[in-house]
Length: 143
Image (cartoon, rainbow, N blue to C red):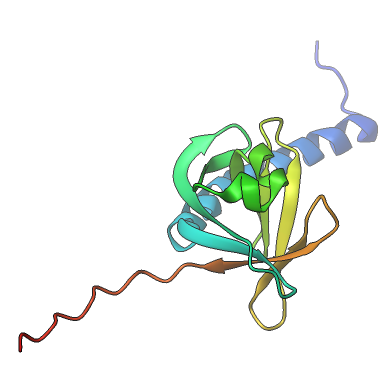
């Protein structure tokens, strides 16, 4: 016996199909953003503060996104970084550092100048910048 489909049933099914299609496309686009975002980044306050924290955005998956490697000194510089266990892109211009329960600890949004800025859980403003690869030292001339 065929059950009649009512409009009330069609709408949730259509929403579910749209959600599944969106999730599938996000999986493909997520793989495309990994290479440009992975690597070492440095967090600092936007004001004149000497403290910084270097962290690695890794391509290996974890709960809440992809792995983060905090370098030595991060917890001392910014106590809230101790909670960070993952990173993810919530949108093309929204980088989220998340805790082990998938909650965003800080959201960095790309501003009109191309900088990634966000407000931390301590209500301070932060900037995250891409670490430039270190150039090998020029060989010294022997005298």
